[in-house]
Image (cartoon, rainbow, N blue to C red):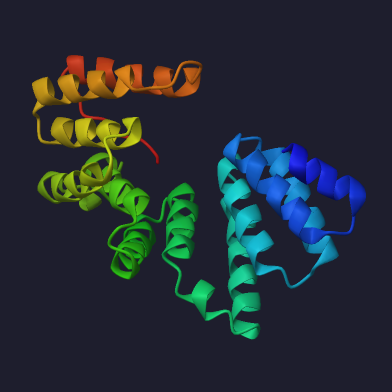
Length: 221
């Protein structure tokens, strides 16, 4: 953060510095601050596709799917115009679109975008995990498939046993009515949560209680 603050102070017309600081705000989950910096980057460089995609991600964090979709489409339009082929067929863009469509509750498009992301990059751990989560927890039973969810959750776990992946695997077990396995897995996930991450801890404990009550989980990403 200090580096970008210094860069902006020395050159307040440097769009890359605002982009970089915006990304730091994204990591910190300060979406409003990120939106301000990405907007400034766009004001300084109107054809900055990367800034549009990042601002779309911040809008997703804010839960504003409409603005996120506008920014994502603008980013793709600019990338096409500038012949930025590495962006046009980027698995991360499909993952971003999946998050946008989930907010809009269009689960068909969510599924399609996640599968495209995985098809472009079978090692996209987040896409694998989110597809497993969709298959295990989607509010619309049409899109739930416990066996398929287990397949993709296992693929994500092979990359790393981070809390988010274990949380998904626990939800998959619950969807298959394997509540003892769900409880054990969720407890493992809880034990791996970093100190101070109170929001995640609360969410994970809510799910743990649900599994102890013999109920599968239905929720968002």
